[in-house]
Amino acid sequence: MYITGWTALLAVVGAVPAAFTQSRGVAWLWMLGVIALAILDVLLTVPTRAVAVHRTVPASVRLADEATSTVRLVNSASRTVRGAVRDAWPPSAGALANRHPLRVSPGGGATVTTVLRPTRRGDRSGAEVTIRIAGPLHLAGRQRSLTVPTTLRVLPEFASRKHLPSRLARLRELDGLSPVMMRGAGTEFDSLREYVIGDDVRTIDWRATGRRAEVVVRTFRPERDRRVFVVVETGRLAAVRVGDAPRLDASIEAALLLSALASHAGDRVQVTAFDRSERARAQGSTGSALMPVLAGALAGVEPSLVEPDWPALVRLVMDRLSQRALVVLLTTVDASLIDSGALQAITTLQASHHVVIASVDDPDEEQMLHQRGDVGDAYAAAAASRARLERDAVVAAIGKIGADVVSATPDLLAPRLADTYLKLKASGRL
Image (tube, rainbow, N blue to C red; front, side, top):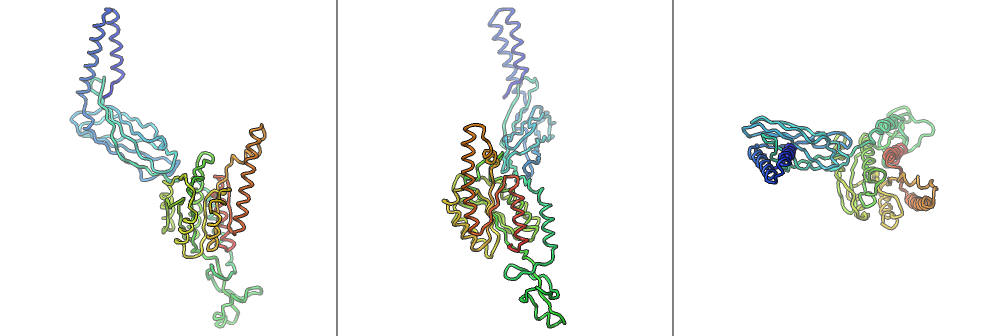
């Protein structure tokens, strides 16, 4: 039950005769009359159970895009239903104008829509749908909140996809270059051509030479069907906010761009989210089917306030990969990697694969280094300088192992990681 403003106004009007008569009895009689009318109005109101409610939303929506929540109401009563409906969602779903007027004819239906602009990725569950049915006197009515289970999956924004066309153009340039003369494992035969001075004699194809009147050599190109294994680390440092979002979101953006680029290059991509156990994974999909699967898998991943289990991660990677691959570890490069066992894990992986470490830099740290306004700024700059020196020492240790390190601010990490991948392709290391 609820009362309207008309009930309150009618109660206030009763103060006029009470004031003239100076009688409490008149005032109480008036109030009892208003209450009786309100109760009568409720009794005459169509029961809320006569209205069936169904709510539908799209299966998924990309962060920063709009989705629509549609509520369908069906009136099974013999009277017209008038009132309002509220389609409630949590604040992170970004529901706009979720209160709608309601008028449904007997046996008819009505549809109301609420625009959703999610502000966080993940699964957003709809709250209750509240129906208010006004009584014929408009003094009171019936109200009921219904649980209508509905879930909207908010996919990562993938804002870094704006960098994909330029990287694909560079990838086509690499494919369009003259075949690179190389030997050994990890190459694919491309074509035969006439021998020229300076060619490696080990590339001579003696059978083809015997069939022709000239010496013929084999040319090779970098192997396309390579494995790219991306690890999105979801430990405690992934929860640290850098700018307006946690580090994990920037890592997911980098994983999406790299996966899209590697898929276009013909490589087989696997992605896992890991801390002490595997939180999500995407594998077995190729081509245009990869990105929807990957976005859906990473949408609901949240950081855990635990230290990553690096030996378990090594075992996972070794079990999944049966041949040499590019292993990309999206984590945080700082002094804690030395004591946590991460360096030993990187050493083990580097022995069988090529490892690239990608880390998100905090842009606030750069500002702290240059601020000298007061004593507090000086201490902050000293702390930032010490953190940078420790991080540089960790980067140097990783470099001695043979792995590559890519670090950048959240907006730049994805394109720089993609550039590193292209450099590896161009140099024949991948």
